[in-house]
Image 1 (tube, helix red, strand yellow):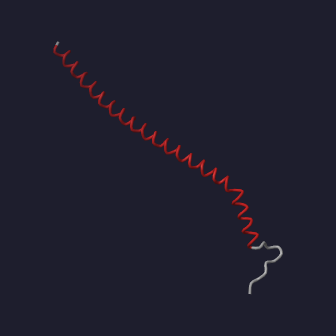
Image 2: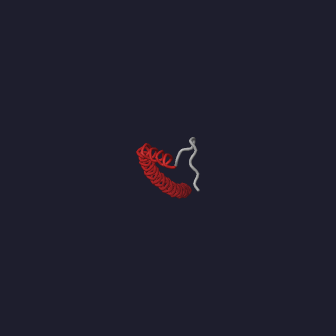
Length: 86
């Protein structure tokens, strides 16, 4: 035996119709949100790539700075030795 829905309870058909109405109403909005999220994700990935490139450049500049510092120290020692010879 199945129970008949009470007058205050919606039927399964009414619930399904309401769900379909929501899908129809929200569908385009959800599609737009999905597109926005996809664009945002793509933008974030590009930004991440740029950040990694900047980090790489910073690392390279740091390495170059260390080498230049070593060269300056070497040149300073050579200059001091030349002055000592005079």
